[in-house]
Image (cartoon, rainbow, N blue to C red; front, top):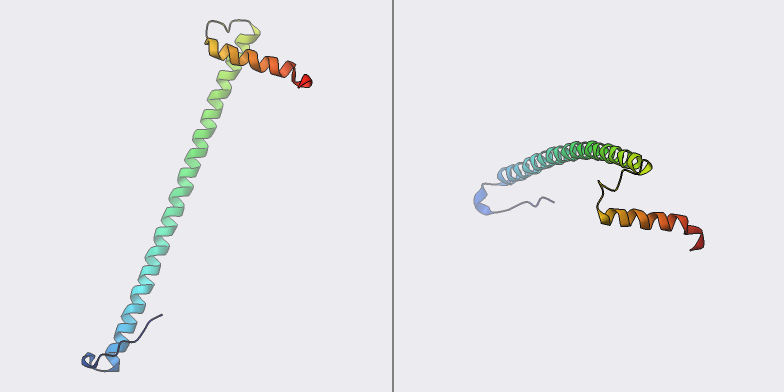
Length: 104
């Protein structure tokens, strides 16, 4: 909301209208700048999201390759040299739970 300023030394109604016009132009310029900033922000977020998806896919592929390699070693019983005791315990616990799931 734009309010008229009536001060006697402004020189009449024309100066008040000038102030109103200047305020309206300033508001319009502000809105344009804000819209540009929001558009730039959205573009940056979309770009970062695409990069995150790409990194996620790369990570997934690497983990999948590691799992396939480890599974091959498990099948060949070559796993004990490459895996820590903690990981072997986790694998044993998971195997135990999988076998006994019906009993839970």
